[in-house]
Length: 86
Image 1 (cartoon, rainbow, N blue to C red):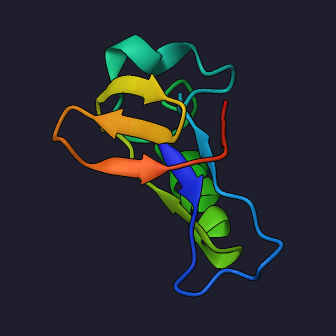
Image 2 (cartoon, rainbow, N blue to C red):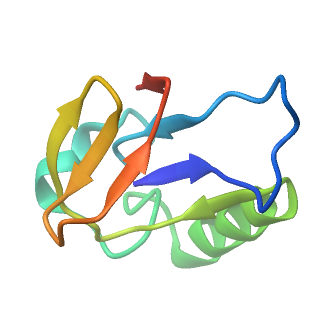
């Protein structure tokens, strides 16, 4: 699971949660331990690093329990607020 977060987002920022870490998001049920699991690990690692550089946090291997109107509830009972869930 990945989402764009920041310590103090701009007032016009939107919270978005993207579920699924594969090239097409189909790996959702498998909960892969890294993004883009169908590609070589160096590509996955480089992609994670690039996402971090633009302010995104990557949480691979995280199980989603429920999509709600106010965000995404994880199996660990954490909720991540979101205006949009993809």
